[in-house]
Image (cartoon, one colour):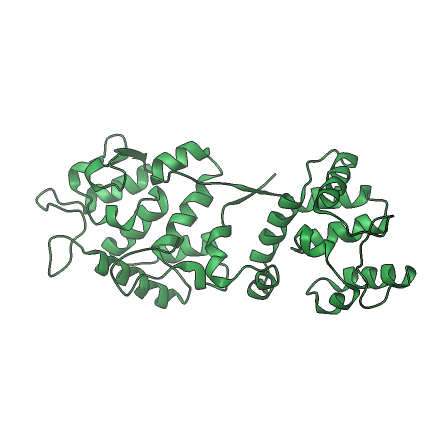
Length: 311
């Protein structure tokens, strides 16, 4: 969901069109000269905590000896205490910056405690300076994606305080090629390609010859579709895919076909997995917005499709 705060500076990352590289963000953050601002970013990237929690951090919340951060239950949304392991280098930097005489870790010139509004303004200002779309939600997303390399989902949930977090499985390029190589029928090959382009089974089942020219798919797949149509002497009003009894191809049959494709390649395959793969490929494409819109995913729903992991 978009970040919900009571300030006008906070925006969800869902409007982002260009994919932001995690390595680039880390490099830019390391270049920040203001220690307070840099530590704010570093804590976000290395803990996944919420904006409302970071402004409440105090000197005593840190165990500098063991490089741990305690999120007090009274500042969490679910009234649950969390303990997060920090990198040793970051813990040492926070220790140098922290002032035991001050009640809160982060303050401003006008207040002993930084406000949420000030926090989001800091993120927004650096976002403009870096010329990239960056929000607190992005920073949490970076933490989650980076943590998947070393932590399991339960550990990430514990760190971030998230109750639910799903990893949508996708197929990598090697598995896609492996499955394609085992497909023998032209119809099955086209259906596999359409699913991988983001078309849902129902849309494929109801695909008419006249719809082919409207598809925003790879030209090679369009050519195969046209050859398929020409060979079967189909008219513009005809359905592209029908059964031997000349009836509409059901969702169940498409599911069965994809499962058979996977079985031949000794891989798990189903329409949902292929759709996830299509979304994942679209998210890394320069034409991300157009491709996701073609799949029926509006800009307002882009944020629901993070957290992909290869199956």
